[in-house]
Every structure is written in C-alpha cells, then in structure tokens.
Picture 1 (cartoon, rainbow, N blue to C red):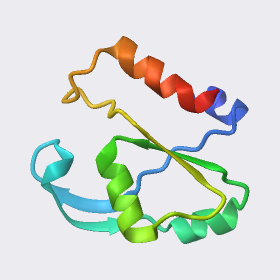
Picture 2 (cartoon, one colour):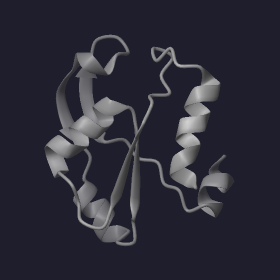
Picture 3 (cartoon, one colour):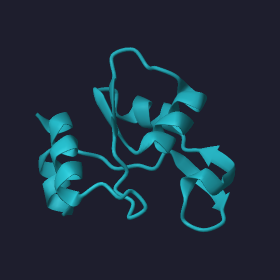
Picture 4 (cartoon, rainbow, N blue to C red):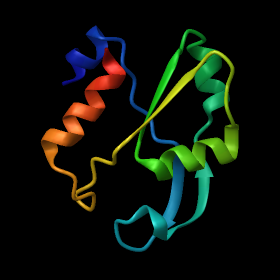
Length: 99
C-alpha cells in the first residue's frame, strides 16, 4: 500500500493533530487541535489537490485554514462504516478525484 501511494505521489495526513472524541463519530469531536498544515505546505510546496474523507474533515480544514489559492479541494463520501453508501458507489465517487 505504501509503495502504491509513493508511486502515485499521494500523501495521507489527518486534518486534526489530536482531539477528544466519545465513540467513533466525528460529530462528537471536542477540544480539537489542527495539524500544522503551514509546515506541510512549506515542505511540499507543489501540493495541488487535497481530498477530504468526509464533510467533517473538510469543515475542520476550512475553519482553520480557509481556501488556499492554487489548491483544488475534493470532498468525498466518508469511508467510515457509519456511512451506509455502498462500497461500489463510494469507489465510483472517490475515483473521480484521481482522473
């Protein structure tokens, strides 16, 4: 899996560095601390695309960093089992951001 990501120049990073959450649902997140995206963008200035795994991660990112010029955002359906969308539909939608 790591080789696939490296070959395709894909990085994976959580929007939040840490938080408190009761259970597994994002709606229960409290006391969150965003990851240091400024350092990430300084280290990797050629980032052109950010793909969010669900609406909540996008919401936290926008709240803390806003829209960044030159970067395209994709908000994909959450891969969480709580999202009842079929795997096939998730795969079809997720595939659009890699075209």
